[in-house]
Image (tube, rainbow, N blue to C red; front, side):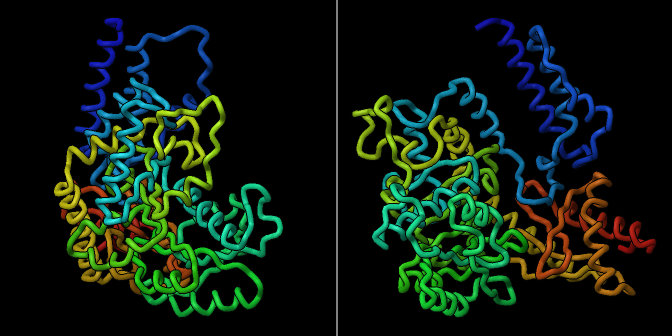
Amino acid sequence: MSEDFRSAARAAAELVSDYLDGLPGRPVWQPMDPAERKDLLELELPEHGTALDELLAVIGDRVMPAPMGNGSPRFFGWVNSAPQPAGVLATLAASAMNPSSAGGDHADVHLERAVVRWIAELVGFPHPAGGGILTSGTSMATVLCLAAARNRAARRAGHDLRLDGLSGLPPMVGYVTGETHSCVRKAAELLGLGSRHLRTLATDAEGRLDTAALRTAVAEDRAAGRLPFLVVASAGTVGTGAVDAFHPIADLCAEEGLWMHVDGAYGAFGVLDDTIAHRYAGMDRADSLALDPHKWLGVPVDCGCALVRDTEALRSTFSLVPSYLRDEEAGELGWFSEYGMEQTRPFRSLKVWATIAHRGRAGISADIARCTALARRLGELVTADPELELLAPVETSIVAFRYRPAGLTEAELDALNGRLPVAVQQRGRVFVTGALLQGREMLRACLLNAATTGDDLRLLLAEVRAAGAELTGHRATG
């Protein structure tokens, strides 16, 4: 290896370390300077190469000063975590090895088997050998799980879907709620099911799937000659973090022969917090669970995971081994490429292994428990503030609330809260996003960073009040 690379690697380590160290003291996010943005957009393809030290200078001077903001302890937006340092280091090593983790006898393949089992153990999901695979994220994991559900239903109906496609099958129906993540609809559309055949069911006051409404809908669809096959439950909805009641859903799915899929992208790891673990009772009865180590665990993007109860249901959906990839040494589980869409697969498992091994179950559990405790505290602060309104119970680590100064109509409050997230973001001191909840605009604070403090929570609310006052011309209180 050239001394040029060794020197640049050392400089890169310093650059990354300085960046991470400096996050708490800098603005969370600010709009890019228009000239800097234009320069990046219009970069010209170089004719000749650039030295490594010069590349690092560009990265340090022009890229890293304009982050998304999710490394900061005052970032409360969407569900984007700060990266765990162990995962950052492992990402470099994985890039240096640069294998294809499709299969074969090399370390990354066996490590992925181990870390998928670790993930299943962390959330208490049954793990048959081969019963899971790392993906780019829960969006892709959802595609894999729903494809397996679709194929099982077709097979039970006497139809070879892989050979004949959907032609000849009655419309296949899945059941969701208004809080179900959009990746489920995308998966249904991509798999040829059609979003028309995803029935949106009623929820209770907390946003959980109503099993009585589910039972009625299944009966109606069977009577109409349709083929019910799937129910999607949530282990932490996107809007409020609500967790469905899994046991009643699992009971109904067992009675009706439906595949129960749980979207645990963000919230499934909440089961590690003893204070809220009871909310997850019955999650282990699902046929599949999709979740993201790159969310609450802090594994560097990208890394999702699909877990399935029936290994063969997943493998039979995707396995297609060309002659040049046959490997007698692969063992009875075969290659990972038989369990999903990717043939060339990146070395995701090393950063998962490093992140989990560095913190251990106890450390991860403590981090998650701190986040949920901070969320409950934020909910208390919102409730105590006469200008703020808590819109849903705090179940995991998402707090749904809105700014509600006196004297405004509901329509004016809606318009104000729709504008607030960007106004807060542009101030640079905290970052929060918005969403719709039952048709109302709200602020949605997601806590994933165990380094967040009580002072950060108070600053968040102060910034919401200050930005709200600027928008309305009122005087900020508190």
